[in-house]
Image (tube, rainbow, N blue to C red):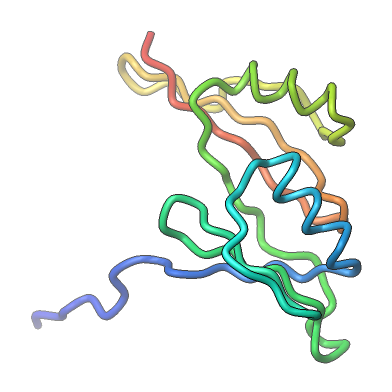
Length: 126
């Protein structure tokens, strides 16, 4: 039985926030994402073609932590050191999670201002 994939790519991810102004500052100023636009209850950022929506939950049932988003960066150690200097809360330090052939995948987990856990990842040729 032949099937055709319906999903082609992820176009937008929503992250629930408690304080939109505080979250706007974090994602724009600390992570350096490009703000597309914002309203009183939502903000939209561009992350290399993927839209990231920060939103105040419309109902209590949506007021929970988001899924972990893995942001790819060129230099994980440099990103880590710069953001530690800016007061970003990290859960751990950059570390290798897998080595495949001549490539190491490095990760480090952090908290945003809304207590969501996310990560940075880098793939490094060795």
